[in-house]
Amino acid sequence: MNTATIAQPFIAEAQTATLFVALELSKATWLVALHAPDRDKLSQHRLAGGDVEALFGLIDKTRARAEAQLGKPVRVVSCYEAGHDGFWLHRLLREHGIENVVLDASSLLVDRRARRAKTDRLDVVGLLRTLMALARGERQVCRVVHVPSREEEDLRIVV
Image (cartoon, rainbow, N blue to C red; front, side):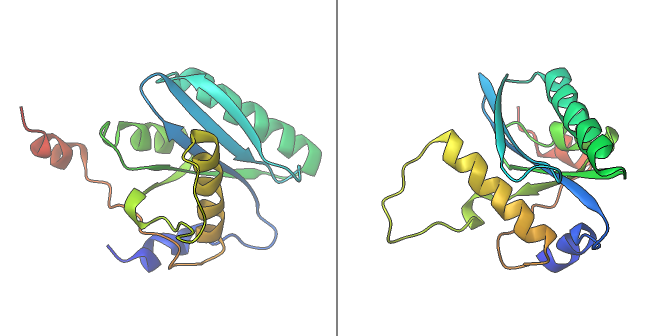
């Protein structure tokens, strides 16, 4: 799928405040990186794997704080890498009013010259920076995965 058509809705207007959320998912734990428009630094939080209530609580709390600080609405944009679990989380995030994209892990840029430590903490920061680049309109930064409908996804599952 063409990333240009996906990235276009994420280009923020100058007066729009955006909370960026990146998720590094595993069965045991979820690592969440946030960049709020009222803060200069990134924050990272570790949640139990699959704990969507804690995830939504963290996002809602951060959004409310930013809205109170800035005095205007804050939209939330999130991302995670496509994986074995499928797209149920994407649908849940969208139902909660969060703009979400699922990224193709093999398309994420890495520095080929540097020795790269493989840790979830580094990966989630890289995802967050990729999401922010997509929001700025940088279409070549990675590929966005087409999310199938529930019915299409069910047809893909092989028993």
